[in-house]
Image 1 (cartoon, rainbow, N blue to C red):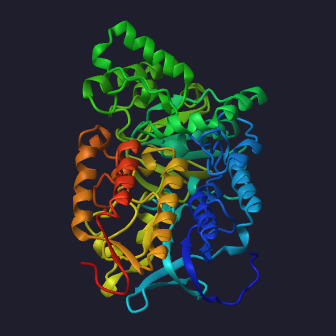
Image 2: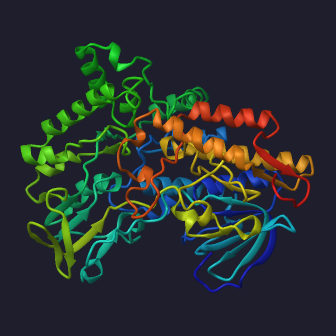
Length: 543
């Protein structure tokens, strides 16, 4: 829809969907296929979710293009042509727009409209969804396709509001782009968006100062154009490739080793790491079967990666500051092009905020405990209020007016990452308690949408009104998610996984580790008549 003022909406549909990224659009497609009416609300001026907003220099997916794509339609798989091994934001956005047009999805999507509230009506067993445009739309089901990385994190840095030059956030980049030619630029943050954008900003800027709190591990992408013959080869075996991905813990066809590092000699260990380093990408974690399980194995990987940084970065002090001290994988592993080599440029400087923290931002720059840095522009590569941020910004009220924010005051609680006790007929796609951000998101999205669509069909065939997690099943699942996470090294450090980047956010590791066992549990629950869910023929309180 255009920016022309429109009448407020008053309508009743079967499914209200919040978000028009990959998750929301596939949910719309599946709902229509089941004969259900649906309305999608999207805050952005275009579809695409995170790929609509994240337009910073160098923005790319860290999963290879031919895997980071829908698999529900073989014809779509065969007809789309990717141009690079790792697709850019613009190409991914082009792809999702192609999908929207191909399946005629736009007519049910309302753009530039933010959902502000969703309330469950126990008498009618329906959700009422309200927006910032005054819309009130009811649906039998409410599906939250709000994305795991959709709410930008603006750090509470003293004086940031006084900076009189432009400030940009990588997660809300100007669509017209930014020209840094001849400017003194500061970048705060060295997570994925910082690692992707810093090399390109450095090529433009007169001088670039990188303000780093915690260094990140990053693997070279070895990105390249995708030859037509290479694409044909993948497309010829797409079903097998997708099946292999479903059997992997990260839902990526990464050729993960079944050999533990403990059983390998030093020479074999080095050879294995060199092989995955030269291959590039997230497959580094597949060098051995125990890298995220055993600290000794992880230490070997960490020292290998720190050695690579020291070999690339010419200045020894800068190299040591870029060498992460933490466990490999407890912060999201990054994929880069020339990131570490960028610090060999004469116009790039690294400020280690652990040594000299930022004291304040002034109208003209950044004052650390050691020196003042004059800047013409500031880039915040400070990430997101991940996993729960978007949901907690909507006033969601379930049975008896209970607010989701209150239910999650000590951290998110869900059953399977799909539903929440006390909130009937509300589903989350890739919600907390599911594998979500530890996987190829496209796989997790399709798995959840298919599960949700099947549940809706189950209720319709049996003339049931509601489906809702039982409180005891939810509590058991929360404990299982925690137990499985604690058997790994993922919760071993402060990261956005556990909400450590958001002041006051409860520290909870919110993802289920391991896609195959998770998918098996979801299937078993369905086979057992939706075990752990209360199913009701009319509006009644969950037992």
